Image 1 (tube, rainbow, N blue to C red):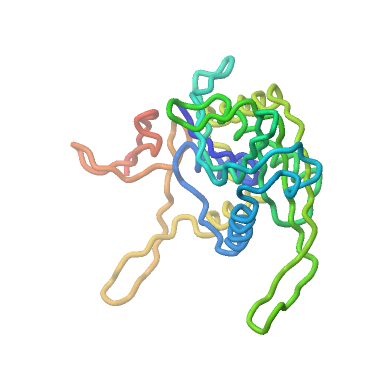
Image 2 (spheres, rainbow, N blue to C red):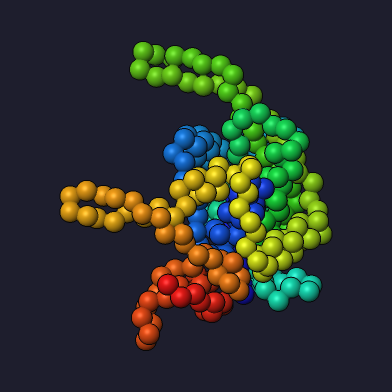
Amino acid sequence: MNYRLNPSDLTFVYDGCKHCFVLRVKHGISQPSIPLPGIFTIIASLQKDYYSDKRTELVSPQLPPGIVKYGEKRVCSRELSFPDCSSTCVISGRFDIVAELDDKTYAVMDFKTGNSNDEKSAMYARQLHAYAIALERPAPNALELSPVSKMGLLYFAPDQCGRPDASRQVLAGPMTWIEIARDDARFMDFLQGVIRLLDGPLPPPDRENCDWCKYRDRTAGFVTEQSGTTSQPKTAMLPTCPQCQAPMRRRTGKRGEFWGCSNFPNCRGTREI
């Protein structure tokens, strides 16, 4: 099987809950989106527009000289394989900004809103490595920028609020550059572990730490039947596949309805209804 990995999924989704991560990547079942973080997307978009075509010296004096030339471009790697793994993966996503440095190498940068810390930076390092690998080992017709010599995070931590006029409010705060040391061997080992996780059985729900797993537990089995003008719930536990433990879907065949594995055709597990 060839998995499609989004660099952002290798951060909070992967660390947050392996059950939900496998559901998302392998079975196409994503956690519901939360509206609140949308403001961070807006802030990052404004930053990308502002720094576009600017010198890297303006972005951070710690960066080598160059110019920001690429913003929000999609990347897609060629198929990546790993020792002792039958499955492969491709990396597909969209980076924040990339600068072309004066020495003809490239710097991949990602905007983050909030205070920096070592734990978060280490997690986001996976995201930057994924972009670098995809840029240097692109799929046919995908964007190629090579070599990537610098990677880093630009943290914006608002700590002041101002009103330049009666109709506008502005937030101000320091911009901090956190350089990420490149370690391709370690990242590829991490990716190999991800592939092994995806190839294995569905991990059990994390009922202790994952809010979505807790929610599914509390609402498991409730479906709504229409009865006249009123709706009455009844319990109907949704089964998991006896072969790979993936969620099952109601299907219709020659002999009527049955439960079929959501991972079909890679898995042909069935259950009677």
